[in-house]
Image 1 (cartoon, rainbow, N blue to C red):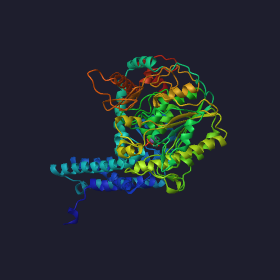
Image 2 (image 1 turned 30 degrees about the horizontal axis):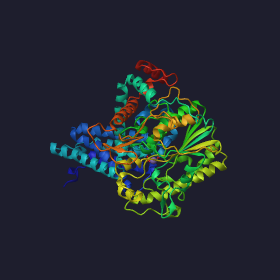
Image 3 (image 1 turned 135 degrees about the horizontal axis):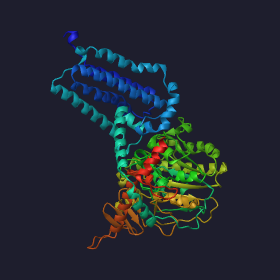
Image 4 (image 1 turned 120 degrees about the horizontal axis):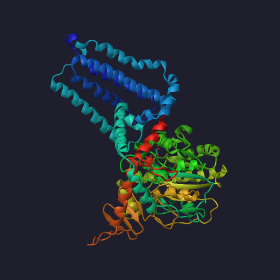
Length: 640
Ligand code: GP9
Ligand code: MN
């Protein structure tokens, strides 16, 4: 074959050059954490998949247009990549469409743009020059496939894309539904597909918001005033007034380990004692109500007393909605508000959400020092996390509200052997086996934290709230769980296992006790406000103060199951809450049916508020409702 006859199509050359360049940027210019070979492989593959996806479209075009298309897609692709790189150098994050339109972010970047562009970056434009040069030799580099060839080239696109998505799903199950984190998306599907995904999400969210007119808010407000009003004042009203509030979200901690042992050793000795302390109020029937947004859902529940969404993480999908969140209310009351969490700040989109709901400061991963000794599994170990936090905590203006989110007791519950002080459990589930030593580890870190607070002189002036964020052991481990608990895990037991620790520790209180009533994460916000002596005013919540006599009579889970004083309902079965036995079907209506209706109504209301961003039609200062026109006027003047 003569050399001149041998053609490497330009779209293939472009794919290789652009794919390689993207890989180099991922690998050496972004700071993406790669934990295993599978992630490495996906990171290597996806740049080529994305590049092929875009460039292979050219086979459908006439030769001259084909060349033009390749030239310009190279330019646009490079610009997108480069803009992300510049943005990343400043924010350690990727561009999202909402961020582009958040004036202050772009302005922040504007000032430092030049310092974020480095001379060697010029090499990132080299492949454009090559493709541009080659594209002028149309006859040599253009392809003119017959129809079958065009279809085959396109079929390869779908094959590659499917392979990429399958690998990514294997590596991160439910990657798209859970919409974890931008870094995960970029690592797994590449920056271009990530932008396509981001654009789809934004459009969908925008449409629902545009169509909403706020007429439903009145109905929801009436429902809340009738069913979840928090006017009642109890003896505990204001007990924590002017004190600091230290809220600890304890990763994956469930009640089933409390007061239990492995090989004769208590799993959580500190929490076991703490809940019995005369200074602690303990709610043993407190349920988590999270869905796919896991920790972030539990944060959303606590901050807003609204339900998370049935799909996706509201922290991700509706981070710029109007809310009347706990930190905002507390800021008005002159509290300093902060969050401590030693993970990447964009995980669960926390950086955006925290900014929107008014936290004064987020001490993320960058505020902590990690080294080989103190970091494993998900990152910084809890003991080092608390220890390193104290210096910041001491500096904060008082009173403060500070949320701590622990990390070590997270799936897959890894712990170096020399840090484990109890044995693993022995069952067919590695997850449940590993769960015990990390639960113990986190329990010890909490004990240390209490001591550190005392040493820092912060303990006496604070109340400390501990809450488990969500389950750590899923139904997948039912066999092992039933061995551990000595009972069958049916629908009833599944719901009961969704109970997570909730304790309020008030130094010097002396009247600590256990409240057996049913409570949930939805109730935390009104309860904390009650303790801090802050009136409900015009606030809107789905939860009720846990200390009130007159409370809403059910706790709803996101999948429609629920608990009442007498019943537990799960997957269409109504159980007697006391005996755990299913209630026999009779000709009469199931006693769960009226609750079922209420639960659906409430969850539906919460979803409408979020999807339509309806709280923008309600003025929390005076409790007045605003029309769409009024809100649009206000938004316009705010933009100017
Ligand atoms: C991540 C941590 C764990 O920052 O909060 O998240 P999870 O997987 O539990 O939602
Ligand atoms: Mn969690």
